[in-house]
Length: 156
Image (tube, rainbow, N blue to C red; front, side, top):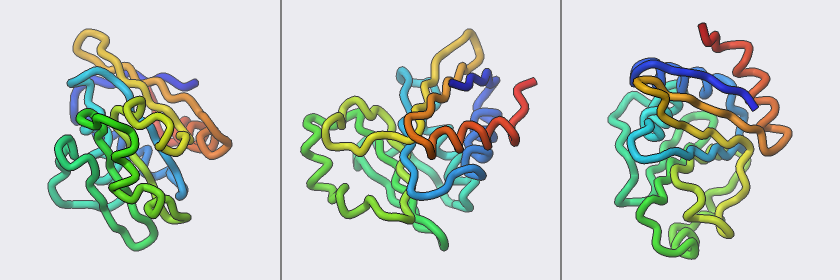
């Protein structure tokens, strides 16, 4: 496990940009945390780091926002309003799992049993005016992500 403490939205987005630098598709990241901890802010940083320049909105109502890049496709899920994990099948989740895909999944517990297992779990919590991020590898790819992230991000 690797832990980081971040101050403010800008630093959380910057951290997301650094995560983007160490992703190697296919890859699945679970983003867990209470409302308002910045899961979407982190996802926005990852998407910016991958090269997306448009508006990044939370897919709370659509459940899924796809983003296509030259070398990969990124799928940002927000399962907060998911009433049954089987709804993910209606979105065609099985078809989205490819060698060039990256999944960013907010509220992953609501998709349990249908969602693929993560490579890395990122838990975000409040710590006063700061955010505590705990990254836990769930696969060999997750270990690579954490090891590479340690090289590019200084938590001073």
